[in-house]
Image (cartoon, rainbow, N blue to C red; front, side):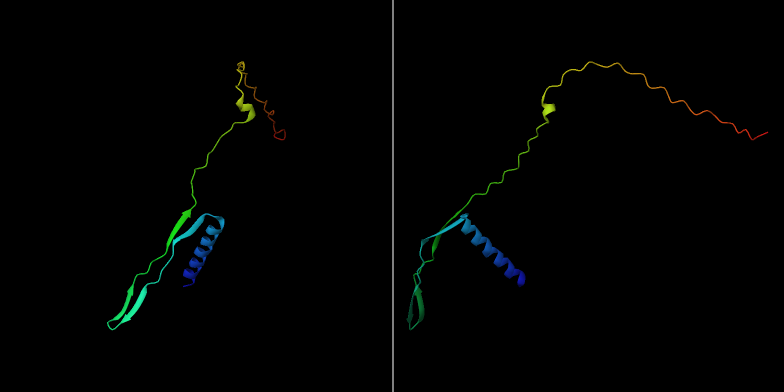
Length: 107
């Protein structure tokens, strides 16, 4: 029950917000008339009456997917100049290993 009341309150607040911002405009075009009620020996008879009419204008909602634009960096925008090819270099010689030590304590 509390949930239903909360939903109704939220709907009323949303409607008030929509009307206040101009998103929803409600104009009554025809007024209401109550029916003519007469009492006879056969019972109660109701004739006529008219329900009100309304003209409702709502705002437009357009869903447009976001546009993603990719811009390269400043240095990447300029065409790259051809660079002269470099000669492959010789791999560096391996580092010399430490000299082997002998244990002089053996006879």
